[in-house]
Image (tube, rainbow, N blue to C red; front, side, top):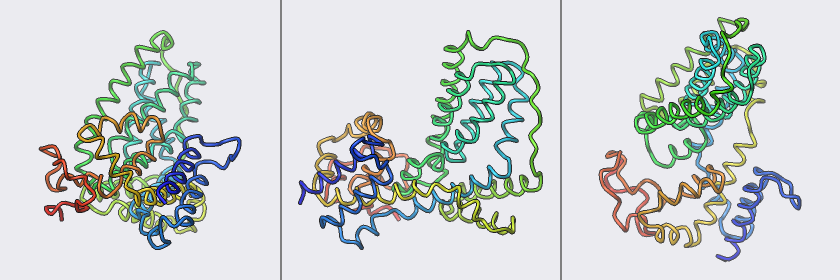
Length: 357
């Protein structure tokens, strides 16, 4: 059975990593779904176990954040924020700094992919009006969004998985990650200015026309988003706090939210749900525990290059085995003050230590 399960996982991994194979060009979500079905079909998991393997907190948070971002985008918040940032950037260098800071800050509160999608057209228009090269500013948008998203548990799907499986609160994670993300963002801006210094010449930028938007709708969205963020820091359940924001906007807008739900990336939800099942199937073998036991104290060092070789979200789910989670440390004593004991990641260890709630 172990060989069959490993074969199913390997096929799924190839379909996910290769995105689209010529032999079977079905894409990542369908590849993960195929793997989840096969894990049940070959008997690695019973249907009930496959349902239990799906982390509902992560799926709920993903859905709620995507719906919330859809409301934010429809209200014109991204256009409004970008217009204000660009208007204050009086030089090409200032524009690069403004774009980087805006992309990084927004990605800390919203999913980074959405920030890139919504900011890119605005950056392109600003560059075209100022007759500036697109390359430096688009690179700044992409890299800054990635770095800024690392600051909070809602910045990207990988962090959402980490939050759901580690038990870290939003405030605790942000206290650890936000300073590092801010430093990385500052370094990134410096490197961009250094690398593109010859492309950032020129005089003052031409004024950008003010974006048109519904001020009432924008105000409602901003108030709700602030409320959601406050709930995050207050320790509320992340998924239901975000869902509460979505429900509040549904009631405030007083219209059918079908158009909002149409903007939710349902294939991403399918991908993550199926991936949880695939990994749960692999955990029925002894390979995951054996791999972590072999890695020992250097497991964190090994995880970094591993996440670069594969999709980092895949790596996050793969390292979510109950015997390999951050439960090696009590949740009340984060950050850890000592290395975990050698036996903390053994198959016989409890899911959470006795000192955790």
